[in-house]
Length: 148
Image 1: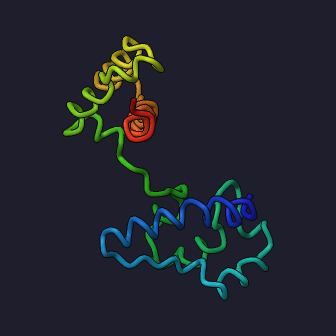
Image 2: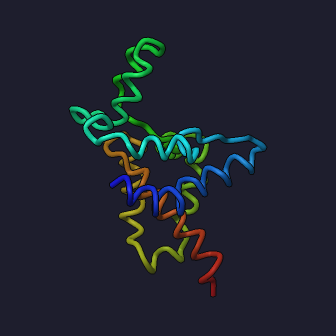
């Protein structure tokens, strides 16, 4: 899985996005574990030291166990998720409603379904943020590239 991540997902997705987003905000991003010397060394470490009891980066966590808080050593790996769930409940709520009520979406989605999707999200009955976000992106794509 690490091979696939390294040769596809990281170079073609994660690192590209990180680079673009940090440059767009005048930030400098460093990825120290991707330094080729560090990476070459890490490649020689046997898998049993990399993953132990379902915990990834095991040897790295152990190396820093006396330096960082225990909660950081034992917590699961996390990315940098975009808070779309919160955005859709907050200031963006009205704009989202306008986008989802766009008549051109009626060709592709049931208007009743879109309304129900948003209402269930707002009422806390379901976290529909990923579905709603995907539809919003599709709606903007539709406006840009498929407008009549």
